[in-house]
Length: 217
Image (cartoon, rainbow, N blue to C red; front, side, top):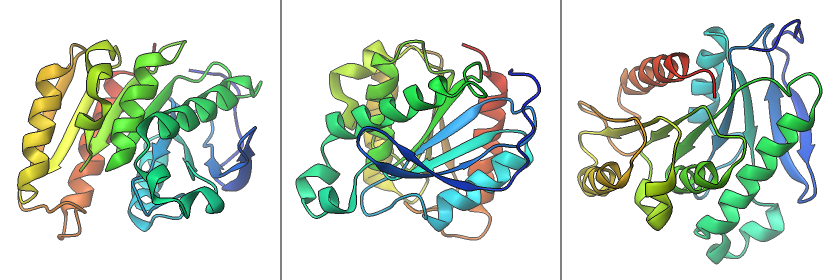
């Protein structure tokens, strides 16, 4: 944990070079880790669900960085939305930017991925140096990480809704391919977006516990 970081909890807009990615950074005093959010297709830093999760994680002592993995111009090309290599590279840029900031250089970094963002988080984690501390996937497509799954070293938690049948199967396949510390959690009564009452709160509980259990890498 980094010492003497006392920004408070006021969010601020930042830009991640060189791609000019827009992001929202919020850092509580003496954070446990920095959780970088990798959004799915059609989503971004203003995602209500991820902002809800981020706010709860900050209450538990985590800093958060919610960012757009693509610029508005890039989003117009639908091929970019599903370009996992491109998205993973952008996530790595964000992690590098965090480490280059003197105030945050010693904070462990975690990834929270949703939908295609989960695949990007796993690819980035497999390639990143220094290593990522932990990964959580919410309703994600970790299978999109393909051959990179076996190279992931970060402890990985896959969370899927019990009503999200096809995605459950894809997560089971990815789980079998992972060689790092791992867990697959199925949230009863939850669909793909975890819109059902209480289901997103259950995601938060599992994610916070996972990040707290693996804070240092």
